[in-house]
Image (cartoon, rainbow over all chains, first blue to last red; front, top):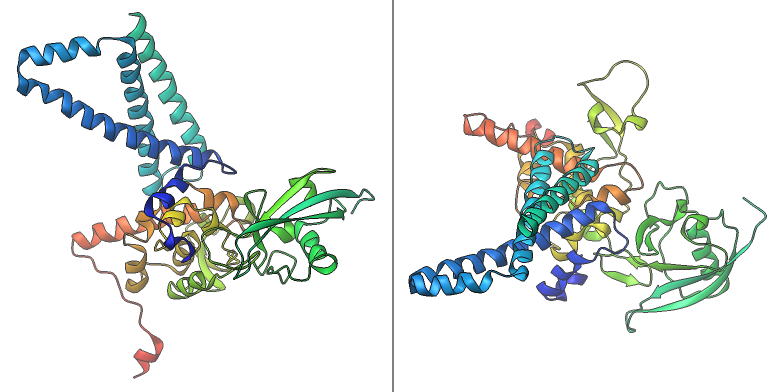
Length: 130
Length: 257
């Protein structure tokens, strides 16, 4: 098992995102990684936005006026989708780790991801149309 | 066997010590009900005697002929050609991932064997009914909740380790086969094995992709066993918080001194 140790950590981690020839379980694994990276990026963006408060009300209001456009609204929908997927998939892994529903984990994954998609869709409709 | 004959192109991964990895193409006339290993053997016998691969029993007992067939980990002695291609089609054969390639399709599985030895993997284990898939459970008296001796399902083929995305990025991770071996050995009475599995390169490194279970040809269910180990470890550690101890297995030689 030493053949891959010569590869850089980045090259090795890139293998996580290769869905070829794998099952739906791998899709859950990949989604968990992508959503985790997305949420981490969002956390930093969120903190940088909050840091505008330190500049003063003027700076903050100016920034808020910039982000009031459909592109940022779509970004917010993505954050909700990522949060739902990561949270629900994480709940599945916690349940499995406690010995619960291991043999039906694939069905559980499909059901939970479907719930995440439905909730995200409802959220998107409310964000754009209401 | 059928009367039908298919012409199939086998793209076989080649890698010798001194050469870089590439694919050689071999056109083979096959009976579609033959197995992939039969075709590989025929390539070796009639087209290229330098092709290296591992095989032995031809009936899924030895676990030697694990390879990637069209990208998916398969035990080639029980993989019918009909399942992986069609008349005039292509079959791509590659060595397993996450093991060093010795030559062509043969990989070095030494580290896995040593680790399995270290966790006490035995050919015969005490297993609970819950650890056995419903279709493989023994008929007869109700064994619910009891442990009974049975031949280990694991044939140490390494397919689960090849399919594991975590082993691909963390070679130090014990891997599904080894953790399944630890599960069958039991951790409740063996502090040493408990320590081996309850660490960052043990059960907690698994990220629940369950690809190991998907490719296992022997119904070992490594994914289930890793999750069950987590449950057991959590139980043991909570008991220890309240003063409970883990009994250490007494070595017979040590006891006789």
